[in-house]
Each structure stands twice: as C-alpha cells, then as structure tokens.
Amino acid sequence: MKLNELVASPEAKVRKRVGRGPGSGMGKTSTRGQKGQKSRSGASISAWFQGGQTPLYRRIPKRGFNNARFRVEYATINLSDLNKFFNDGDVVTPELLKEKGIIKKQLCGVKVLGNGELEKKLTIKANRFSSSAVTKIESAGGKAEVI
Image 1 (cartoon, rainbow, N blue to C red):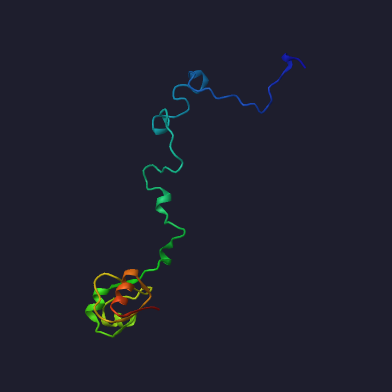
Image 2: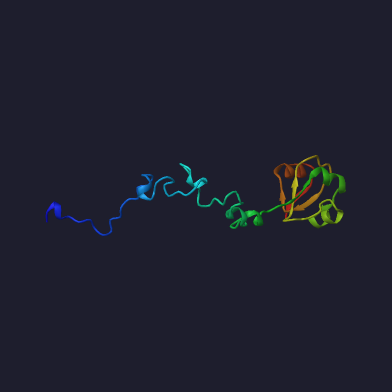
C-alpha cells in the first residue's frame, strides 16, 4: 500500500461549506432561508420556548409531595380569656371552650398560651401548654393537665 493508493472510507461525509457563492448552491442566505429569528447570527432558541405562548411546563399543574396536609394546627387560647370566662375552681376542657364559643374550631387540639394574667384557680385540660402558661397556672394555684 502506497500513499497514492489510499481511498477515503465510504462513511466519510464531506463538510457542508455554506456562504461560498451561488455556484455551491449554498450561497447568499447560507441555507438559513429568508429573514426571521432563526436566520440571524447568534440565534439560538431553547427547546422549551413556545414563541411567547405560556409554556407547557407552566400550564400543567404541579405534582409531588407537599407537607401541608400533615401540618398540625392548634386552636390557641390565652390565659386572659380563661380569666374572663371562667369562675374559681372550674374545670376547663376543649369541649367546654367550644360550647361557650371561646374557640370556633378545635382543629388538632387546643394550646394554652401564657398571654395575660390568671387570678383564678382553674384546672385546665388541653393538648398543649406553653411553658409560661404552665408557670402562671400553677402560681395561681391551678392545674395544667395534658390530654
């Protein structure tokens, strides 16, 4: 085998040379057609672009995991409210609070917050208590019972 006997392999494809005059068949517009966004230099449009129309990925509803459905939300009540609506020695339960209209919904339970002062001796049954509420209830001589 000599250098002058070498033949190009049949798979070798000749590179397209555009913009080299009318004789090549690829002159003038260089195979880009007439005008328009794609005929300009530097034009590259992303595959998901839909010409200003709202793209498909924004038209389709979101899917996947969302923790909101497992969120635990408590109906809250302050000590100042308990002081207003109950007498000395009463037993306060979530059912009683709902019955009196102090809370609208029980949700996942009732949480007692320590806002305000408690001057009455109450036994309070609730799902949760803030630490300040427990200290104020016990200093007033009452009891904080977790259900």
